[in-house]
Image 1: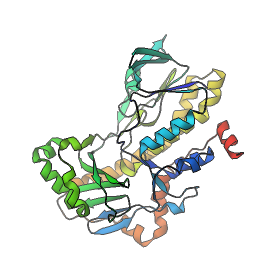
Image 2 (image 1 turned 90 degrees about the vertical axis):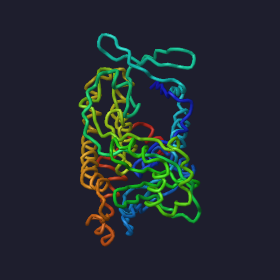
Image 3 (image 1 turned 135 degrees about the horizontal axis):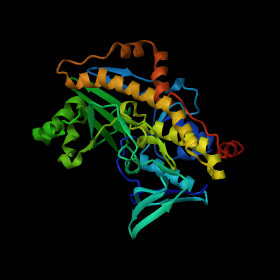
Image 4 (image 1 turned 180 degrees about the vertical axis):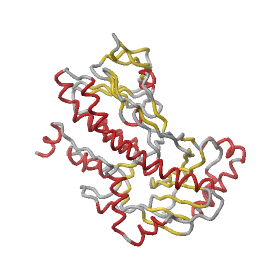
Length: 382
């Protein structure tokens, strides 16, 4: 099937919010015969991720219980993962990746979506297609252009995203840290920590007014072992705001158009599962649509099957994320009292096998997909 991917940037080198390649995604790479090549790329493995709550440390999940080939999350810069995927896709003569090409809206004929309008370095381009797949994220221009209705589920926080250098003496684990009125995420990227400081939604201006020195003090207070490096945050230019959204489309498709991933359902950063959901959407899309696309008979009924297949895991995941946001994160951010871990975290420390439950939700999701296209059978014969 001829596939053209439009990427508005000239490369993938940006600080994406998530660098997690989940066990379910690693399983897909195994099914495609690509796992060994993928794991040759630099990455860190998290088998039992944890969180520091006040002065106590808790293991919150244990991926060694999963029935998957890889029993860990691979932390890998997303640009490396995207470069890997685009290189593997390049083996197909029918695949084309156009960089510096920004899709700006849909093209319609007689009420049907037949392509997209795109801006390139040399001018405008019309790309016609049997099917347009919108995978352009939570701020999707394509879904906006198509007039699809979005249901806002709600998120009480935003994230301030920054880098701080890492020393060999630092803990190796990717972790979350929670203290009174503050929550901090630290992703180990070997040479540096990719950090997320969680703030109440809409409070960025208040933090800015306090000044960068006060913010550095906040970071040092929640992660004392990097206190000697918070000066690397020279100004607010070194910190990016990631606006958290939790929403979903009521209808993921129109005739000739399908939305998947964040363009269909923006996820909370809770659990870092947004990438997992997006990849599972893509696999379900391929499984369900490859025959109709080969035959040139892809209809709205076919597109609806993708939404039907992926609605349950989307809603269940968002329901769990919202519950954690409302019952754990928001009260913590609003509180000035000493923080204490909820009872369930103490249970996870005392009864290790319980860690398999969050590991399954995070690592596999509520409905993991498997390769059902001919690629899987070819890989299994190698």
